[in-house]
Image 1 (cartoon, rainbow, N blue to C red):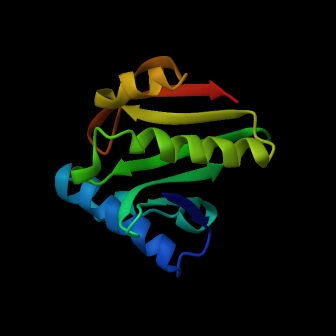
Image 2: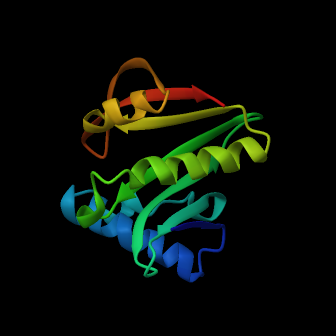
Image 3: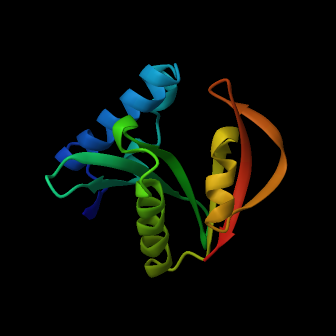
Amino acid sequence: MKIVHTKDTMSDIYLDAVKIRRQVFMLEQGVPGEIEIDKYEAACIHFVLYGEKNEVIATCRLLPLEDGLIKLQRMAVQKEFRGKDYGRLIVEGAELFSKEQGYNTITLGAQITALGFYERMGYIKEGELFLDANIEHYKMNKTL
């Protein structure tokens, strides 16, 4: 297993991240392409978890916000790899990177079906339910 990251939207790493996002968000969940691939792509750090055979397993991205705050977005695990703890690994990798870069808080919008996953990882739900791409979400935060 290895987690790699890039800001280069022309790299193979980025293209692997987009491949997972297209499969999970666009094909499985029906998110329109113009919402999924957005104006923040070049501003984000994109992470990909690769398996022992270099298979593409999971992805997420980090969007730096104001001082000390970074936003975890687009976390997805390929269907055949779900339920095997890979989501935790990619999020922990992004958290470690964030801490090393001097961020002290991660925020995210969790799909309602992922609330338990993020709560188990120490994220705290805040505010009211909201829709993003017509999918129910809650804002969640974690202090690093």
